[in-house]
Amino acid sequence: MKNFPKSLSQKLQQREQNNALRKLPVSNNLIDFASNDYLGFANSEEIFNQTHQYLLENDIKINGATGSRLISGNHNLYQITEDYIADFHQSETALIFNSGYDANVGFFSSVPQRNDIILYDELCHASIRDGIQMSNAKSYKFQHNDFEDLEKLILKQKSIQKNNCQTVPKLREFEVLSIEIYIVTESVFSMDGDSPNVEELINLCEKYNCYLVIDEAHALGVFGDSGEGLIQYQGLQNKVFARIMTFGKGLGCHGAAILGSNELKNYLVNFARSFIYTTGLSPHSVAAILIAYQYLKSEKEAIQKLKNNIQFFNQEKLQMGLKPMFVYSKSAIQCAIIPGNEKVKSIASQLQENGFDVKAILSPTVPEGQERLRFCLHSYNSQKEISEVLQQLSLSVFK
Image (cartoon, rainbow, N blue to C red; front, side):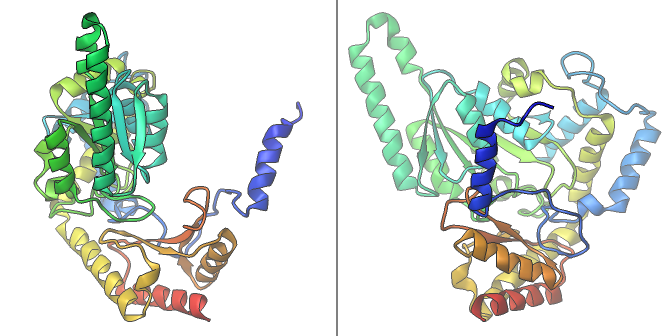
């Protein structure tokens, strides 16, 4: 076998020196404070059995999609499931992608056009940023949840457009005037667990005629009476251009959907390369999405237990004097800032040795100095487990 490139070896060595080398974890039987399976759907035997039964009852006995959705992979379950999702989320349409990553890359690489502007929160997920990098549009980040900073950027871009209109030849005037601005954020940030003021953000978008795109990956299953997500919970779904719903977290399965208008769906089917040029999900995967959504409607107890655990976690960290360490969050993601890769890895190891699966998030995944422990809460965590893991954190930090 040919020698590994020296430049790549050096990059790996640098990661190791920075105590930031990633390795695949080994499965364990620790108490789960690490997974995104907020409602326990991924481990639900009932959902597994009902998915299997649904396939048998509908005589669906194939293992794969057989091709991309535009060739041979668009089996009937897609239409049934997309219609159900659209109805559940009170959206005109839904278009299923193979993953949240595929959805974000497909959307941002195809929808914003050359000379359009993308303004995105500086803490947006890597999949959003990767999609933006593939776009022909110009992009600028605004400070996290800082809408004054965002408005300055909007005004700056509007001013540039106005000046261009005054200087370009008449034949190009329409082209300049048709430039669009897309505002991008998340309803729950994956590495902080906090949320933007969506109503204020919508008002800003309406004021300057911008298109708002919101990733709801970590809100599905967490916010709303039926886990419908933060935007719909606040009754703002008709004021957002596109919502990205990811199924590998609260829904416990795989895939994602982009919610929006019929025109948007038609556009994505024609131009989103991560949709066009990939094999579709298997019937089993799509059936699992459908059954999991049906469970969201009926499993109110699990959703309420999760909400109770989030509230209890926040109360406990306050009583134990740990609140200043944590990023403000009312979601299932709770992050304690512990600067330094070595220190946060050491405390994570201590928690794991005591039976709690809590993961350290290191730089460069988060900025240097913002390394953290990420606690993911679930409907199946007991209050005793929550108290004990926070007590252990307190002992590890303040010893």
